Amino acid sequence: VRASMLEVLRQDYIILARSKGLKERVVIYRHALKNALIPAVTVTGIFFAFLLGGALITEFVF
Image (cartoon, rainbow, N blue to C red; front, side):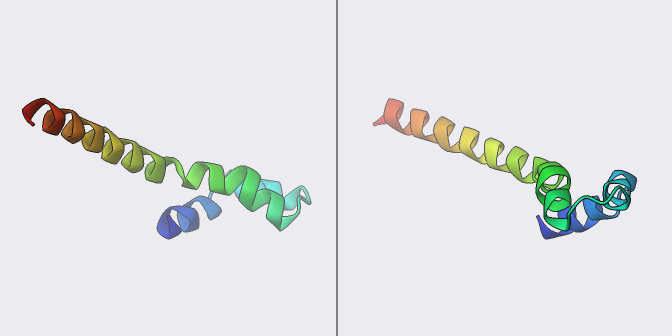
């Protein structure tokens, strides 16, 4: 998440939001964090899919 956040903070729309005078907290939470969490949410979703799939197979076998 850290690397993704650092990458997002260098984007043009973040620089534009800062130049418009938005508070740093608003820029981070409303703009940057939302876009930085996309890869983490994707990996978490895949992990839970494997977890549920494994549980179904285990219940079916035993």
